[in-house]
Length: 289
Image 1: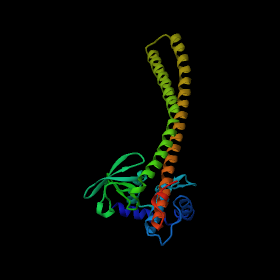
Image 2: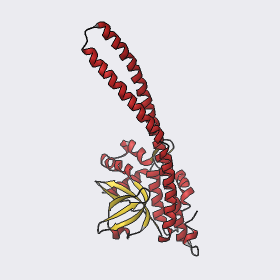
Image 3: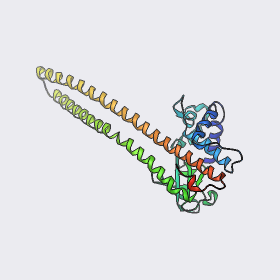
Image 4: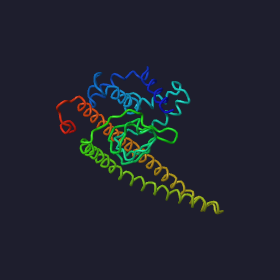
């Protein structure tokens, strides 16, 4: 079951050597999510969300990977069955969701960061979901279905306008960054076209050589082939460099976008916590910049 796999993963991640950065990580987390106190009503769920962030989101500065990825790469620490299941967890979706449809044993949600819809297995009664509910959650893939981890941060109806405006800012930044990739993609396409044209010329000359018996003509064509091979090598080098740069930049954009989304969710989680603790503060005075 997915619950068992998740519990085993948490146990491994919170034991040495993977737990060595937990205290440092908690300080990083609290920069955005604020302090969490044991007498908070949502203390347990807040701590569960922190552990999820630690395992699935935080990039270990030494390995340049998440704790989940580090665990997967240390196969000897994990049983083959568990390893098979948690490999799929790398495709987890952390988002701000709104419930679109509620069924007996499944719900349909939309992720506000990308407008993607997901059918999620799980009883609506178990999660206390109702249509229109907005919340932070994490989807995990398992056996061709997806499930919520069961740890949520629910946001009140009156916060929707503010949250959507903050998401719009993040989406705008991401689109702006993605536009910067377009010139590089065009250049790569242009270079690939040159490479394909050169390869085609080489192939035609090679076919022509096979049909000739005249050594003088063959020698002349061979000189052309040698020159074209040098040109092809240069095009291949340029194509490889362009593709590498595009891959690196795209990865940076993805990481930055993911980081911006996460920071927003942590900030909103802190706002929800302040609302939970408040007595005389209005919602509009909490969910604001």
